[in-house]
Amino acid sequence: MTRAAWTSWPSREALSARDRTRPRAAVAWSVRVGVLTLMLWGTFSSGRFGPWEIAVGLLGVAACAWAGWAFFRTSLEHRLWPSLGLLALLMAAAVGAQQAGAAVPAVVLWCGCAVTAMERLPLSAGVPATVVALTAYAAVNTEGWMTTAVTTVGLCLAGYVLRLDAEARGSAQRLLAQERAARVAEAESAALGERSRIAREIHDVLAHSLSAQLVHLEAARLLIEREPSGEFRDQVLERVVAARSMAREGLAETRQALSALRGEVTPVEEYLRQLVAAEPGEVTVTGKQRPLTAEASQAVRRVAQEALTNVRKHAPGAAVLVRLEYLPDEVALEVRDRGGCRSVDELAVSGSGYGLLGMRERAELLGGTLEAGPGEEGFVVSLRVPA
Image 1 (spheres, one colour):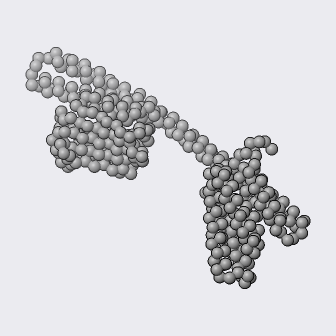
Image 2 (tube, rainbow, N blue to C red; image 1 turned 30 degrees about the vertical axis):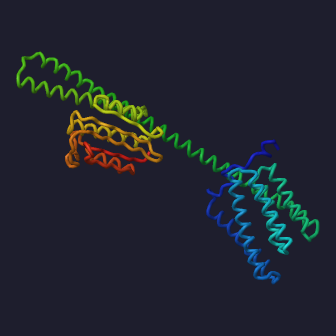
Image 3 (cartoon, rainbow, N blue to C red; image 1 turned 120 degrees about the vertical axis):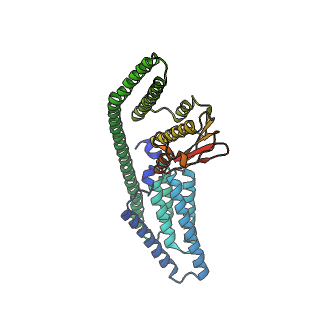
């Protein structure tokens, strides 16, 4: 046996009862309750103890139960000295029970300490603790030496078998967790491959089409500008320039969507700064920055984009303040302008067809909230989504 085998703890998966099946947990608790009931009945029903002694004994049993629970917790956390201290306390309680004439509880405590020390502690600490507990048991055992020897050997083997069983169960749980992680990674890889394929299709069709439209619209603008000035010419030129701007914005949005599909989205903070670059405004970021989920990131981007569109439409030239705050379990976005106050109904549907109603639905689908209304100087849009 290697040195590491003597000094290493059983794994947390092996010591934890979290993933045990219900039948196994029910059997374990049934055995504990049955042993405790028989032990107390056999000890206190003999008539050797008075009412006050029984009350003190029950308090001692409760204290030992707490110490046992604490030992399970400290051993689960791999804290050696507190675990050994609790074991020593339980063995001292067994000595006290033996001196008081309660031999059965004392034997149960010594045997329980021996088995659990072998099962839950490193062997370098568990073996000496088991030896101490079984030596105390053998010293008070009134049966023959052969029975005592067989019992002590059996308890040692029982503790070691329980240790091996727990390790096997912990290894199975770790393998299951690794398999689940591998399946999740495989599913994510497949999803990323499919998204890349969709991105290529969109790029080959839509992005190329928009780029061609931009070229033709720019050519049309240059041709129209060569014509003599007039009301009809100016109207056509205005429409062409507007169509060119819409095509340019659509191409930019398409490229952003393609980047999102490929998982190459720029950080939210950088996107917000790019968004307000042409506006008389500023962006402030507070809290500890961290990567956001794709859904939360997209919600922040779309809400900020729509809020700025509303500012351009209903309060052109107004100063804009965009504030992004990272909270422990969510992210908050606030877009505030210093233009004239507008009503919520006025902004319910914007020119993009998204509007406040769409922003609120997006937030609610993610378990978040969106509030919009007049502020002290202008209009305020506040978004909070889990992230």
